[in-house]
Length: 392
Image (cartoon, rainbow, N blue to C red; front, side, top):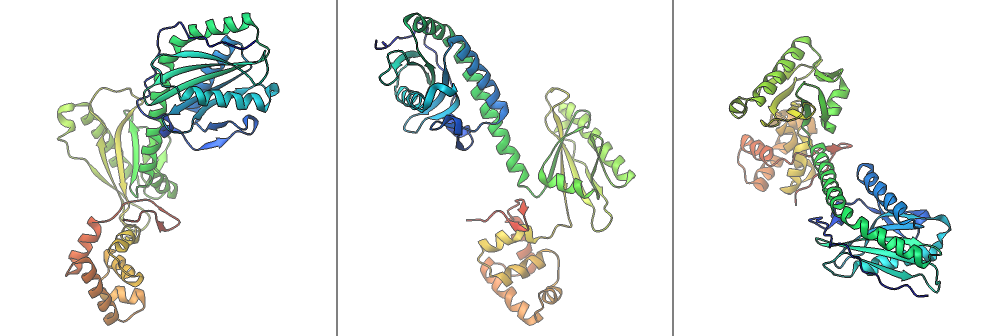
């Protein structure tokens, strides 16, 4: 007996995803046990609630498998969740993916459910619920093995009852997915910086440190952890740092002072070389939970060589390898004679390189050159000693 199409009697459900959800999903990978279904890789915070709701829906419908997909106009479907009984077989999996893809191409303003027979079997069927969404369609496809008329009716009624729950779930889930993706992107952007960035909460406890800050802390020279707090190598520097943090936290809580109080700068002495420089600013002035970030600490390393910053800029200006080397040495504060010695060339040769640098950069003096290079510097994190940013 062929399976008929059954439209849901529930009110239309619209899931507002705001943007194509495929932009918020990691690389698509093959799940071996689900082959040929391709399931998007989500982090656990995003996947767990989706999987829990999907399995709950599966229990309500009492099906033998489920596939949830996102279908954007003109693109291949992206499957967010797949759970098929081991005995279902590859044919059933292919049918599920095919029906989900077909349902995803339907552009309707109403949520609807559709039954389809699997292959030539009169007892195996699929129930796909199509939910219109901004920019695409969400499909929930459920597999039923050896389904009878009563089972089909019960599943259809259960699907209609569950439809009103799908709208708020997908709205919240999509919002959480966007937030998680934005957080990953912001964290990656901060990690690329050569400036140490740390966040502390209202009690002064460290809540976040980017890669540069973690590297500085790992050296245990100038900046270190003391329990959950930040400390310096010298007791007097630790007292200055903590006093400055508490001052900023207090001023941040006072909106009238937050925007007018100068950011304190603290020197964190090291065993050798110039001290690290730390400056502290409040995050915001509105009321916030005590566990939220309340202040940002930026840590600069004056001892860092300028090559990390200036090499990409030199490439932008078309400087040769030796010209780049000389420009970086001058940027580090060397006079021309010392730079020539470091390069193992005569000062006259270095001066000819410098003339070419002036010509290519449109500068006339070393001070002007250094100022231009520093203002043009692309401040990105370096990996294995190689700059990771190259200007176009």
